[in-house]
Amino acid sequence: MADTYLFGPLISTGDVAAHQQTFGEVFDLVEAGRAQLPTADARAIFGAGVDTASLVSLQTEGVPAGVLLADFGPRSAETVRDPDTWIHRDVLRVVDFHAPDFPAAVAHARAAGCKVEGSEAEYEGEDAGFREAHLRLPDHVVAAVLGAPADFFADFVQVSDRRVSEVVSISLPLSDAAETLDFLDRVLGWGVVYELSFRDASFSELLGTDEELTVHARMVGPARNQPYLNLVDYGLPATAAASLRGRAVAPRRGLLGAVLGTADLDAVRAAAGEAAGPVVPLDLAPFGDTRACVLDLPPGIPLLLVETR
Image (cartoon, rainbow, N blue to C red; front, side, top):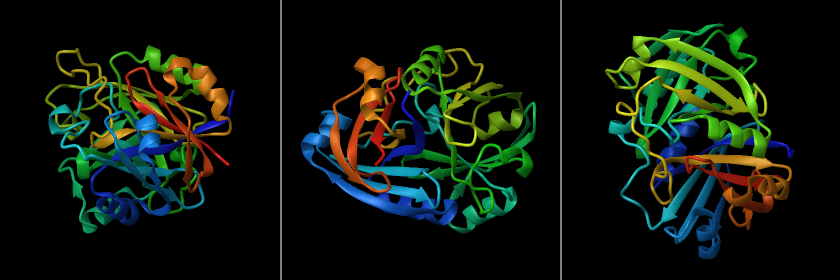
């Protein structure tokens, strides 16, 4: 199985500068590279609805993790999520970062001009207590600041001596996790690296729902201390949390998908079969002058797979 890792989220936006400023000031991400895809390559990767794609990669210094911003043309008036669909399923939900000093990190975000949700969640897992604050970013993107004991979270991050860590995870509420778990195992060789269950009213309030959530989360990735996908079951009936399956399609704005790095693009594409799209050239730091394609997760979420050089 090829060595494949999660770099971070793929965010579709018409305002790259706004996201770059927030991720830079609040989460200490720095620009790594830029690329402009030719029309044929943009359509091959992101679909027929795209004419142009301008990419800007941001990275946490010293680790292979960050954010990829994509400005698609034509720009879309639609977003993947909106405030009415916060708990809906089958598209990505939140980008998570750990803060060793949770109050200081949240205060810094406010001072930087971020809109922080009025409530914070505080809940107990099996192994530790957690605090969580949500930051509203442009295009209805949500980033979370997570607080937990430093000795516990040392097993989950590579950066622990700064205001915030690298991207820890991207949450994905699912209607049925089985097909996604199978795909991640079969195609990427990823397994469950941690599980967390809790029930807490403050978390329901943070997500803006009157429904009482019973959360079961399975963290799936190459290793516990590398970024992973957080597959979430909120314990809700379909009538309370509809599916957004198939909505994560460019050029819609928001938290569109995720970016993966791999040592062997061809091996992963072969394992993915029909879920893998065509290969195009891509010259984008920090990956290098290389090749890329898109894999579609079973719910229709695009994973931009980049061969590392």
